[in-house]
Image (cartoon, rainbow, N blue to C red; front, side, top):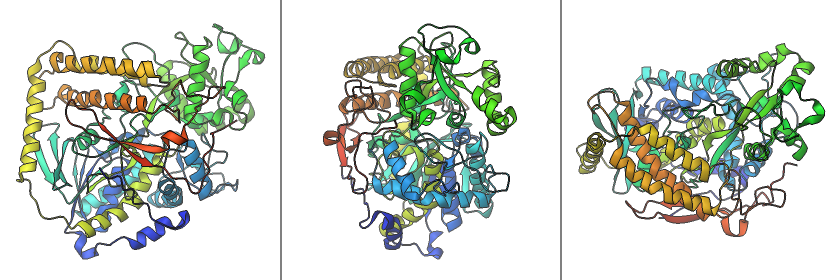
Length: 637
């Protein structure tokens, strides 16, 4: 497998402009001769489909929801980063680039990250032109707030529902192209396989989730914008439908999977309330602008928070990281919460929680200001917990939120399969071992609106894919394999539900490949997962048929993929004996408990190649070369 990153030569600041000039173009009159499939309709997929349609390509866009508006991008709350420097506080494209590289613990490509920072300024202009209602200051200028890992205010926001407003902007652009006839939407359709012909991605096979019909769709190029795989842990902040099936089936067709163990634990989520909970709820990182994180100084102190005097509170993030305080990066803030809870100082009935207190901010600014900034988040918290955060501190605890790993892509966002492009959270490219807050929306829109529309044209102009149709043997073979797999699920007639297996797998992953990892635990997980997977294929119960809506069948396919992905994540985490970002190996830490990298041995992207059924994957390494930033021990103190 060849990992050619195709990073352009020249100065960092000029790479993208030079690359755009050197790429081949498709004549406007020829664009309508090409067919492009986009799987996913969130910020990445929706923006890509809309832009490609606007350029004149024939686009098919698929989503498993009933509308693109229900894509999980809608759940993003706090904001989107851009190096506009509207606050005149020292921000710049280079500072955003550096903060992102450092935040990712020096495990991302310089060229990709600089391009992301460079494009960020265009994203805001694009979204404002679409009518996205960003928050504004009294005089009408766009407002900014701070997020973790930065000492400037560069985050643009729409109250606590930024993802929803950005998605509506992309959705309007997408629907305009649907009406124009350049984009055809396929809602309630799930991609179940990628079809590769002569080494190139030439289409997908889907299942209509309502009728059960299996269909093949042919294209000259395929784009995956299907999000991350956090639901492998069962409990996460992701929507219940979010899954890894599209990228996993592509992996099994030859696309390398990069850094699968790089998963992000978000520090501010509502704590788990019981054994039968099915998902977790995010509380935006933006809350840490005004909320202060603390626990009692004394172990086992169960007094109500308002009865604990200031002198008996430990504002541990402010104490340990005075330069960044409560806005330390997510991986550091999450481990800090785990540390104090492990010491017996956690709050709430379970002891797995810390306080996020707005008392000081309300006294300083007034309740009306806090309500204006975070009102919908406070309302959501009160509805779920029946506690009023205007009167008592919120209780929060870390939870699985985002995955930095994903399919390996080059500078053009193309995977190791020619013609298969991967965008947004589905790829690995921009965030290294830890994503900074408010950067996911930035990456999705950068990839969809600005990067992919340029690079996919270069592929089409260069490759000039030959004509194929859905009658090709490769499509027939993929359809037959899907039919056989479906038949097998329905014929098992076991005793356990899909969810019971998923919950058990998720607990293994959280216990042994979660917030902290060690060799013994990872080996234990690799002992536990295979027999559980074997039992799944022997004892799962999938009622109903495949000829109509059958959510148990949908979940069975997704969980079967999660079993295989979970093994790969543990293999990757076991091989990477350093700590970096969200990947914290207990054997590799500084004397004061911080992540300790091993740049001499692990300054590379770990790209795994599928080895076949019941065969180990093959590791390929893409060295990470740093010419513009100096590798250093990350410090936020």
